[in-house]
Length: 385
Image (cartoon, rainbow, N blue to C red; front, top):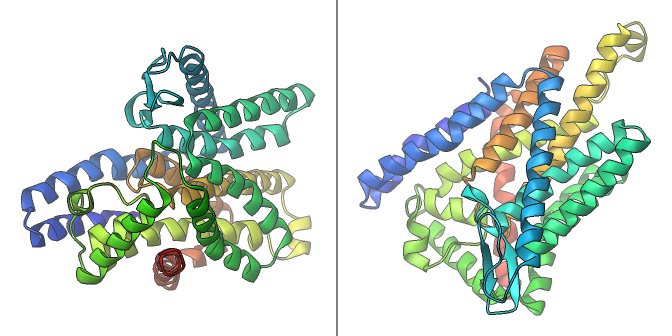
């Protein structure tokens, strides 16, 4: 077990204590149990059992196939839309009598969740495109077009921004320094929100002004209940709708303690992934040692680094879309976090020096960095309200 496991496990007692302090003890037990069973256990299983690149690739193919099935189903919904309903699995979500947003089953019944899944699959497609021959490249080009079409059909502005962000951050990381990357990551959500506030959102969602109001109320809940928050599930009771921001939602409901654990685990995964891209991207820091290393081991390490890169950008897709959606405890997050962490474990076995990225100092740093998102929200509120 690593720090991220303990951090997410730490959410369970905090959820119960937070609910008890807010007068809903039995509800806290129910919420904690649901999180443990439906999110934390899958995270543990994925992070431990995906112990080979082959298993990871199989899961990636399954995700791509599932995404294409959802896009096809969405196309059926779109083409059969009669002004109020579109045929297909899961039906459809309509806005007035003009706009139709595709949906599916389970936690994909919301177009935003479906769009998020499509965005997070795009780096998988890029991986197989880079490794394949001409036929595979043509196939993957067709797949990426299909996923883009699916994102369009969801009508989710958050997932559209996530798509743009994955591409933009890819080129930024490859061509810019760490300070510029940090500045862009901090300022981009602010700029995107302010731009959206001028153009407005689709009629099926809250307006941009309403979204800012939700963020404002969330920050106020955090200020007046700083340690344990207002209790998991209580944001809607107090505001009426979700926060439309996963980070604000967690901070307001679980306070400093809960958000630091949730955000810290997420950010730590990303910091480790970034360090592998930039610092641990070769089998050994010593070039002469690398030259004399077993070529098979070197190739295996390169493959693992590439898989880490793919999962890193998939999680970028989540982090950007989560800034505009309340999807803080979706199963999708914990599955992809588990796959990303499994990649880190495999690399750690090949490169023991990577262990420094899991130190106590890194845990505190990750928790601190996670609060930059809340600062970005605060600045957005100051400018936009």
